[in-house]
Image (cartoon, rainbow, N blue to C red; front, side, top):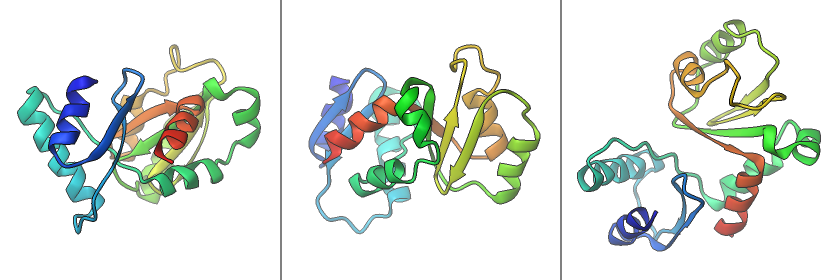
Length: 161
């Protein structure tokens, strides 16, 4: 994570901080005209150059983290079982056809709801043994994503404030 913090600082990000060892980073940006997608692409290119591996970046602003929390369609799960409530930050917004393909193509115990570039999942038996994997979700939706449990979502939102 020190390498990621150094990369972000060298890239011009202010006060880069990381949470846990899973690639979660929070930083401030000076005003930029770059779109989030363009900034993600620049960070991905720099990570490839610096670390020699492909790393996908899914950026969210502090306001977007707040909206993710406020828009949670599963508030009861957030209170009773936050470790099994997962938010997946998606690289882009999946089409309605792709969301339907995921719904129609999976018949497990998990429940999900997709809002724009964010997907919410309840894994009642945990993610470890579920057949609703990140790979299946990404393949059906046609967009990459990175998943965090509700506890981590709340920590990232607090760190972003």
